[in-house]
Image 1 (cartoon, helix red, strand yellow):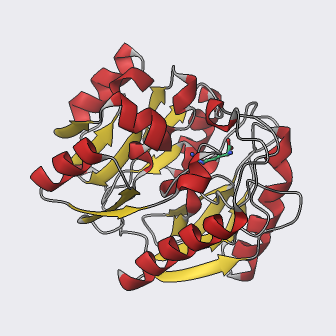
Image 2: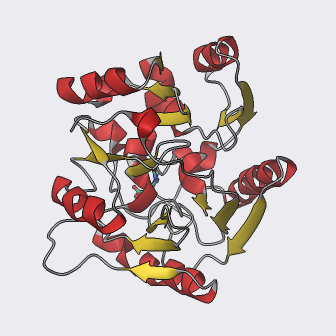
Length: 288
Ligand code: ARG
């Protein structure tokens, strides 16, 4: 698909944050390689403190943080970037697309998020039964900062076929990226869009065509060292305002590069959540 990002309609930055409390967070099954060896290893007190620190950081940056109670037996619900994709159309309508989770263990999370958004007055859209495949919300579908364009990761949790439907449904172009490395099973583990022209990424996570697509559209692509990306999920960082970058602590080279590019990294410890294959980005959902 040929798109010229600057000419696409503007998209206002989402200002609201949703987080799900980590009360029932744990590693009790393995659905990504990061979870291996971590069954039952979560320290609930540390997880709570790390989650609180993240919530406070968003508040200090001026965002309204909504919180939803975690639910027993749904240990991954805390990763609330995955159950929906929030959107705002060019004519101002706001809603969420409900995910169709790949892992059966996570399917019952979706109705809880759906209820939250219904209560807030958002339009809910489900993937029609005629459209095959799974879709994991903002784990794989990322809004390009400032413009009505989606980047869509596929290969592990989301099927490419979903994006044809989604693009028509939301009336936005979608640039699809094939993920090829199981450590980077969601797009938000290997691509972090910082502003309209800058992003962090891990080359090894993508096939050749997808890497070319990223280079074609993002002038300032910052390559993250593989160790920081794999072990510390450096690309699960989040830049909510075009300037501050919330990132797992210890990603020294990534932090250095972020500073050199004019960003302000804020290092946080999400080590308990790394045991489950998640960090900053997937612990919250931005919505319009
Ligand atoms: N254990 C969760 C899973 O594998 C982690 C999800 C992290 N979310 C993310 N958007 N990367 O589904």
